[in-house]
Length: 141
Image (cartoon, rainbow, N blue to C red; front, side, top):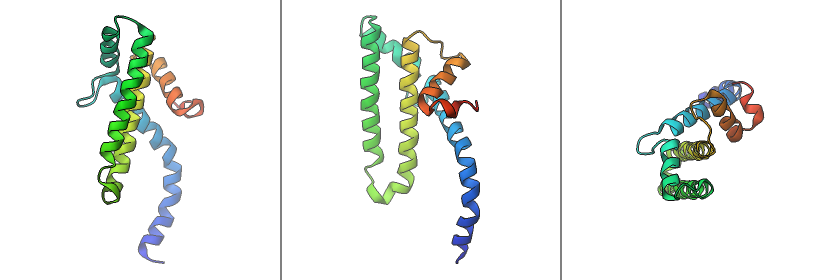
């Protein structure tokens, strides 16, 4: 067995123990960026308010449009990260997962905002995480 084989054998138990914590941290960070905005992507509240204005104050139609817009964003993001094919897969797969997590967090946060929830309230953030991760994953928060 070569060096890479023995290195992989020694790292595997450590990675599997750290993975749940890293995943939760990753989603927490994605949620924070989705709520506050990240780069050219405005915050969830700004996106929700824009849709509410476009839909003349109709909350249900605004929610529908938030969902439609995020489906389009996810499709465009998925297409863009897969253009390079197999050559760029090692870099683009993590970028694709990161982008999708950010879009999903923003979508759920925008819907919560349109339903009247305060996105700065930690209980609301935990509920959004529960929605995204499942109930068991949030118990450690």
